[in-house]
Length: 340
Image (cartoon, rainbow, N blue to C red; front, side, top):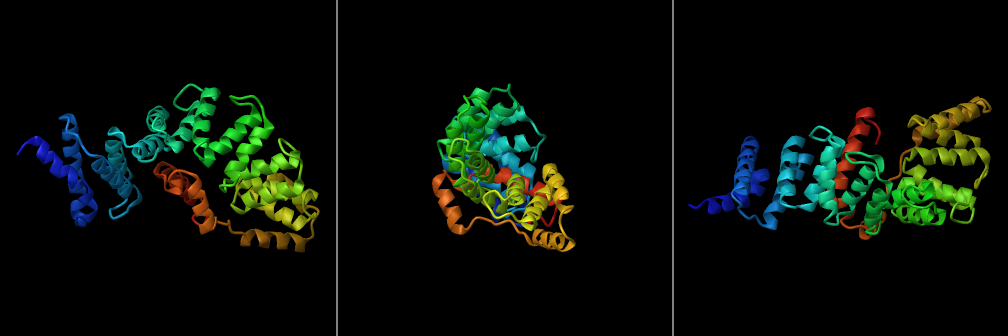
């Protein structure tokens, strides 16, 4: 039998790993992977369907779907699909190197893969690439180039890039300071339940930056972000309750929100909470602490998630973003198993 026919048979069987007996999965995976390497070296053309199956195999190993969770094995399959131009595999591979998941952290390698996916129009890869330029990670810092990639992703509805672009306009990073434009981009991300953008939009209204000053509107956005667990927004909301801005002054609510921000490491919140505590009665402190203990972050509703998905390509199903945030969640759980 000719090499190309043998390779074709094996390539079509690459999605059979998850159906194999537990003891045979790793052996089958290695055999198929070796065959793929040989096929590539001999120039055998593979179909888009086959490449997609390799990517799915990578996801299966990464998330432990039908096989034992194995990040290194997942990384191997991501690379095989990425080498064939699979945009989501390229994005996932970039995230792996960016965050040091299943491989040593390597920003230069991350930039390489993010660029490949970004050049194919992937909004999350464009966001990550902009972030690399913004922070000088794996490439020379270039604020103008960062804005270019943020804008490409933001124009596709990516809420992370929309929020970052708002910050660029606020700070004059890569663009001329423009508070109205900052508020515009914050709103786009805030409407997709992006907590940082919600908090920043709240401060736009509180300070009258780019919008008419409106403390009640500021409270609305602080509240949304604080309920999602955003520490800075919790501080912002506590500050408003402390000063009676946009809400009726309430020291118990102020203590609650400042305490929640303090628990997440906000030192400014800790300092203000402790100053406030010195003026409260023991009963007020007890009540505020009870409210803090009972607080649970509010997850977006199913309808809200559906609306967000409709605004952004592949929405939360975007593999690279899901992989990145899954890793962030795991880090939080390592610090506090009861975080959720």
